Amino acid sequence: MNGIPGRPDNLRDGPRRSYQVRSDELEGAVRETLSRQVALARPQGVDPAGQAIRRANRIRRRRTAAGLAFAAAATVLLSAGMAQLGADTGRDGAPIVVIGDPDPSLRPIPTASIPGPDPSPGESAGMLASETLVSADGRRLVLPDVGPAERAQLLPNGDGWLLVSTPTTAGRSLWVVQNDGLVQVLLAGAGPIVLAPNSRQVAWRDGSDLLVAGVVGTQLIGAARTPAPAEAEPVGFVGDSVLVRLDPANAGHTLWRPAAGELPEAVGQQTLNVYGGLPDGRLVGQLATTDPGRTCLAVLDPTHLSPTQTGCGPDLDQDGVGGISTDGRWLLVNGQVGKASRALLVDLWRLGPSTAAISAGPPMTGAIVWSNESHASYLDGTGNLVRVDVGRVRAGKPASPAPVPGVPAGDRPVLVTGF
Image 1 (cartoon, rainbow, N blue to C red):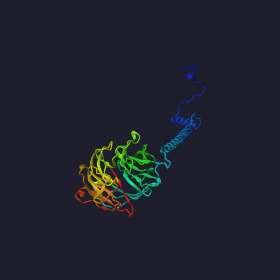
Image 2 (image 1 turned 90 degrees about the horizontal axis):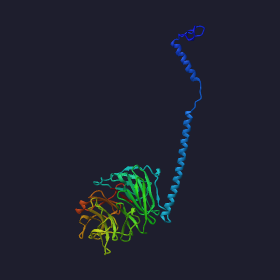
Image 3 (image 1 turned 30 degrees about the horizontal axis):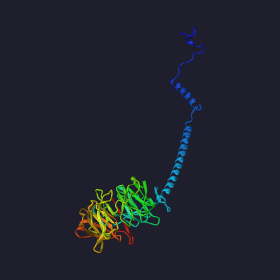
Image 4 (image 1 turned 135 degrees about the vertical axis):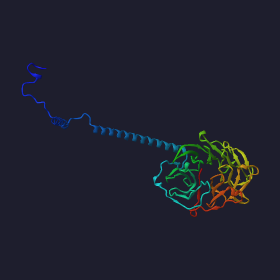
C-alpha cells in the first residue's frame, strides 16, 4: 500500500537507502554499540561492598556489647557467690576452696613402665608410692605437682583417679588425675574427706559444717551442707546417704540424707566402726558391749544401723580397718591371735555365738581391695604388699608381705581402690 499518494511507502525524495547489509557488518555494529554502553559509567543506587562492610561492623559492635554485658553479669554473680560462701562457712580460718579451672602447667605427666609380678586373677588394685601412681599392670604415673596422698580411687569407667591428700596445717586436698595427664584440684583446705565407692560423690568437713557434692568429670556439682557437732566427721557412704561418726572417742554413728535436711541424732549408738556393705544393702560393723575389753561383729540394718545378726567370738582391734569380699562372705579385719596382732579372716555367713577367725597375714593399714570373692590386697605397717588367697588361708597358709617393686626405700605406697 502507499502511505501518501504518489510516494511509495512514505519514503521521501532522495537517493534510495540500501538495505543490503552483510551479516559481519551487522555483528560489528552490535559489538560497537554494546562496548559504548559498557564504557559509559553510570552511578549505582546500591554499593554492595559498602553495604557488606557496614553490616559486618554492626554485627561486631553487637557481639562486643553482648560480651561485655555477659562478663559484667558473670563478675557480679561470682562476687555474690564468693560473698555467700564466706557468709555460710561461719568460721574465722581460711575458707575452703573449690577449684574448677585446670592449670595447664600441671600437664603432661611423664609415664614409664616398671617390672613387677603379674597381678592376681581379677586384680584391680594399683599402688600410689609417695607421688608415683603404680597400676596393677605395671604402669607408673609420676605426679610431681601433686603432694603425698593417703587415698587413691579410680574414677568411673577408669578415666583417671581421685586422690585425697595427707592432712597438712592447711587441711586436706582432693585432686582428680585424668588418663591424659591433666591434674586438677577439686578441694583445698578441707577437713576429713571420704569418697563414695563408685567415685561419684564426695563428702567432707568444713569448719562447723558437713558438705557433700557430686563428682562429674573434673567438677563438683550440687553441693549441700549441714551444721554438725564439733567432733563429727564423715566416714563413708550408704547409698546416697553419708555415714557420719559423731565422736571418734565413743560409739555412735548416724546417717545424713542431704535431701532430708539437717544431720539427725545418732541412730546406731553402739557402732564403733562400719567396715562396708553386703550385696543386699546391709552393713557390717563393730559393736561395743558391756564388757569394755570386748567387741562384737554385727550385720546392721542400713536405715537405723540396728544389729540384725551378731558374732562375738574374735578378739577385734578398734582401728576401723577392714574390708568385705565382693560376694559378702568374707571379712578381713585386724585383731589378736593370742598376744600377736594379725589380720583376721572371718566367715560372715557363719556369724553367730561361735564365730571363728583365721589368721590371714600381718596387720593391715589403709584400704583393703577385694578383687573378687577370694583374693584381696592390702599393705602392712612397713608398706609391703600383702596378697591374700582365701583358699590358702583356710588351708592354714597365711599371706606373706612382699616389697612393692620400684618403690624407693622410705616411701610409703597407698593402694588404689577400684570397683
